[in-house]
Length: 162
Image 1: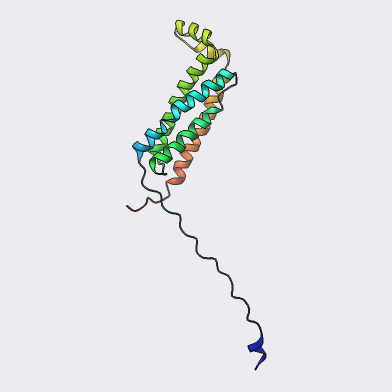
Image 2: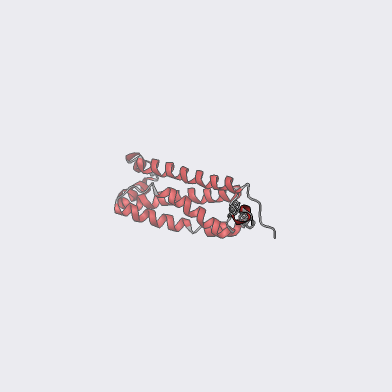
């Protein structure tokens, strides 16, 4: 026998298997996604009212409202969100923040709220504490940017074959 027959054979190089492509998402169901995302409205208003009643600035909840609406939309739409869906989620977020803002003022200062409503304007209450409006606007914009970023990311994904 020769030395070549007795020598150990070098191990074969390990070649990684080709990565399995991710399963494509189903087509977007706009109506179902919108209806489920609407559940973020009462959830956001209730959370805002609780935080306002405790006495904290509740503006940081705005990004949570946007992300909750996005998550609920994706659950309802089948996992996909396009620009139409992102627009719907953004509208739901803005409406939720407006309603939550008014409810938050009413919960935090009910006497002042009643006085302001009898005069027909909330402007004096807003001017009194401008951070109460600045924080929700800033965090709401951040949340809406995240929604549109998610839609832009998913735009390049092909829909599942039916």
